[in-house]
Structures are given as C-alpha cells and as structure tokens.
Image 1 (cartoon, rainbow, N blue to C red):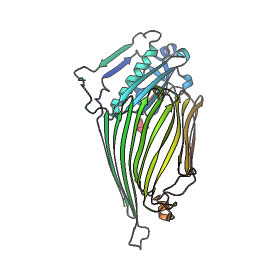
Image 2 (image 1 turned 60 degrees about the vertical axis):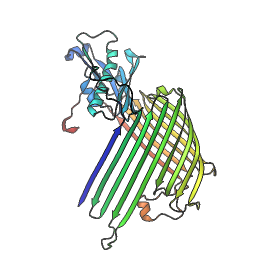
Image 3 (image 1 turned 90 degrees about the horizontal axis):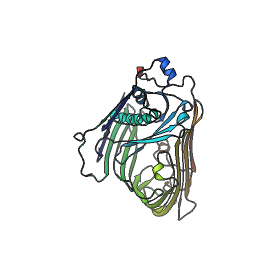
Image 4 (image 1 turned 90 degrees about the vertical axis):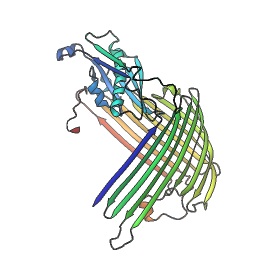
Length: 430
C-alpha cells in the first residue's frame, strides 16, 4: 500500500497594478505561395531563449521564418529574464542583426508581475517581439499589404494611481506539506517561508525566513515492534541591505540567523558589511556582469553537541571575497564564480569554492555545454566530536567531515537537416 499527498500555498502581496494587457500589437501580411516566398523570402530569425514560451511565439508570430541555426539567421533574438522587485519577471529581448542587418541591434523590455497568468505573460512577450521585429521588417520600406493594429488600454481601463501605498514593499508567504507513505515506511515534510523585499534603482532590501521539518519512520525489522525514526529540522532568517553608488559601486550589509540539526547548530547568528564593484555598468546586466565583492563580520554559534574543537559556543570573525562573471551572447552563455572565505582567529580555517557553466555553439548545428563545481573545505567548525552513526550517514542527518567536494557534467548536441523550425504540432503532447 502506498499513499501520497501534497499541499502547497503561495501568497504574494504588494505587487503593482497589472498593466501587461495595456498594449496589444498585431501585424498581418498577405499570404505567400511557394513561388512568392522563394522570390521574396521572409525575415529569418534564430530564437535563443529559455522559458520564453518559444512554441507560442512561433505559432503567434508567423510573418518571419524561424531557423534552428544562428549562422542562417538575419536576426539573432536573445531573450533573457531576471526576477523583479514585485516577484515578477523582467524579460529583455536583444535583436542582433547579421548579414544585411549587420551592426544593427535593438533592445526591448517587458515586465510581468507574480499575479499575471501564463497567457498574459506569453502575450506580453509576443508583443515585445513583434515590436522589435517590425523595426527590421520596415527598415527598407513598409511591405505592401501589411496591416498593423495597435490597441492601447484606455484611461478608464487603467485608472491613474496617486501613489504606491506599499512604498515598493513586496511580501510573499509560502507553505507546503507532504506525506509519502508505504506499509513499511512513512515520510512527513512541512515547510514554510515568508519574505519582504523593497527594490528601487538605488536601494535593495530583502528579508526572508524559511522553516523545514522532515520526519521519517522505517520498519526495518518485521519482528521488531519499535520502528526507527529520523528527524531533520532547518530554520533560517536572512537579510540584505544594499545602496547603489553609481554604475559600478555598491555598499551594503548581509547576515542571517539559523538553526540546523544537520549542521549541529542550535543557533547561529552572523552579520557582515560588504562592498561590491562591477567592472561593467550595472545597466548592462542582461548581457554581461563581472562583480567583485568583499565582506567581513562576526559569527556567533551555539551547538547541539560538543564539536571537534571542544566547543559548545563560540564567536568568530570571518571574511570573504568573491568574483562572479556572467555573459550572454550569440555564441552562447558563460557563468563563473569564485569565493574564498577564512576565519581570522585561525587562518588555516578557510574554504575555496569555484563553479561555472558554459554553453557554446561551435559549428553549424553543433553545441556543447558543461557544468563544473569544486570546493576545498577547511572550515567545518560545527562537526560533532562523536562519529556519525550508520543511520545518520545513510539518511544524511549529520554533516560529515570532508576535505573537498566536486561536481562535473558535460553534454553535446548535434542537429542537421532543414534549417527552418517554424512549424508547431502539439499532437500527443509532444
């Protein structure tokens, strides 16, 4: 017998008014037969994006031809997204010309909120793409037979807002519960969270708290009436305050209050002022960033059990420096991060973490991607003095002593055949 039940609750407050439907753009062109298409081909577009409703865009915007290789395209359409202060998304479309449009670029943005439906979001993205493509289509003159319709939301539909009663604050509540049960095993998990964010061009304030409680029960021996039970609890409150100082500098502070049975920490409190420098202007965040950060501050910890260093309570000062590089171009994406931290009371207690991800288009139809992560660990202050039991090791109830961590993944893709990819067929859900 097996039983599974799940409950999930998400509530967001303070999001701004929904204006995603304020603008509707449609463009139609006279249908072309095969001979006309050959004599007067449509604009060829390479759609480069993740989570941008690509099939919807191909089915809705039919006045261009979509190709599956960027080398065949006249327009490389790169769509990226990042979270906004209202827990929505900001989509940025970069229209990068090649061939007859070489050297011509265009950038447009579309903002959505957490309250927008999936259909509202994808139609807003489609409007953004239509506007950008029409710029290139009309570069050599307006095509004959073209019909363009633009509908703006009326003032009655969008009443003016005198002020933001939330003062840019956005609040979110999250909760979930699940039960997974068999005759000889049962797992119950409850989690919840709350967050408050206030993000403006000059300030960034984020507050968040999460709690997770997991209990597992096993009947290991049918003749033993006493089942084995395992419990894991995690609580965390984190905060961040940042002030922008122009296009390259930022200052702020960050910290957290945590409790973790896995990390043998009954109470941990840390605070750290920090400074960040971005080699590129922050306004270029959708295409490239190179941020360097330094922070230093104290950390207090009270442990459940005596540690390897014979401590049940301690306060230590720790500093860290990190560098993050992020670039998104027509040839692919590159993300890399290096972080080094150290306790000042004992300089041998340190940690070095490195991770990166790269996706490259090598040749026509050939692309490779790789992910790598590695850590050199020398700062496990909270490890219990006693050894972990076999049950704690198998169920990952306790952090184990480790000198390093390493992960690596590699993939390769090669496609060939027709360069066009405009047709969408949803049959059988594929």
